Length: 104
Image (cartoon, rainbow, N blue to C red; front, side, top):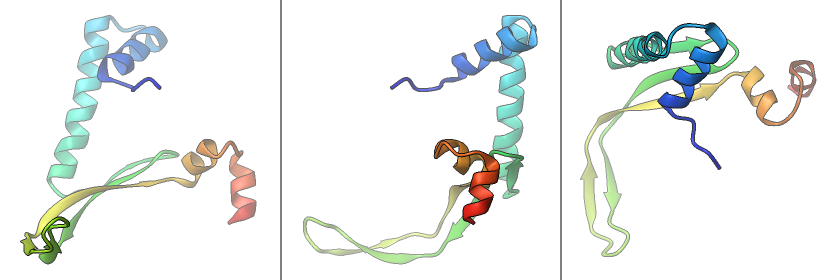
């Protein structure tokens, strides 16, 4: 299994859009920076036909060390979550968008 990397994405932009390699890498970095900044500010990021990234606030809770059973507090924190679109879910399951809509 190959992992999709920034370099792979920049190369895809280079080959499909026709920008130079440096311009392709700069464009990718610009997009990723904008997404990261929006998430850092707590704004959801919705990419049509792909999904929505959002930051959720988790409250404090009590956890347990699985080895010792000792209770430890887990501090409140913000977590990143991703919710795929119906279109992406259908693609992953090898269905067309209309087949996925029929099952919903």
